Length: 357
Image 1: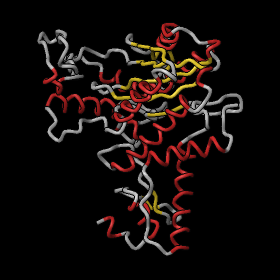
Image 2: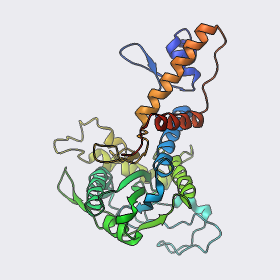
Image 3: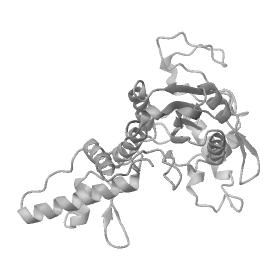
Image 4: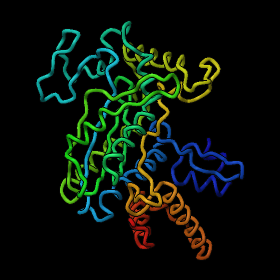
């Protein structure tokens, strides 16, 4: 119905032809993509989102003088807010004994992340931690840069099964000041911050991991791992299944209720506040981000690749196709695959001399 309604609008037809299910009309009358990252809402825009960020991730590992840097894969988790069921993901390993007294198997995946005792679980603390996770990462980033000035990063924030965020970060540091993986892990994990809403202390959980890798060795494997993590951000917080187990549904309802009651800012009135923070289990952070180029820093991408640059290059490509088709009076040609556009954008940036200073 939506495609038929806008079929006579060239701008809308352009968006629809490129796969967007819910194009949006701007105040200037131009139809643009919906831009969602959620695959269940619009697969085309979600895949474009993943492809853009995957290209940026690769750019910071392979498009510069990588022999001058050391790379790390850092994982930081949230603290515990109560016991949850322990369900193994790998059926080939001996499963651990769960706090409920049972030994779960991978077939009990619906229980993964569900509290053992919902009545004592700290739902309010969990949604507040999600709300303040951005402040904690900012403090962590500044603490690491105070020790290693050349540090640049690319991070993916992933939802754990219990409904709390954790972070995967690829970190790059000049070899002359590069620390050991354990030193970097401990510096990050022990960082603390204070909530801007209620002044409470915010810290990472005890579980943290950091591994070093070589861009010319395990770099491709690590980028594959990040691409896998990027796939998780295409999903919504809730389960994709239409048949949600009752205990999972109750857990999600309790989280939603806690987020609804939470103050998202110092002057927030939760009952009247329309912020999306109340609908996202407290989260206000971007799910993917990277350090940006400044006057004195290279930023994560050696070539200055950003989503803004990628959108501009796609728009220029599309406009050039329209001009060529109008001049030649030939049938429209489908857009190039996303990976081709990503590769082309990287080549053009390098050709223009946008290399690290």
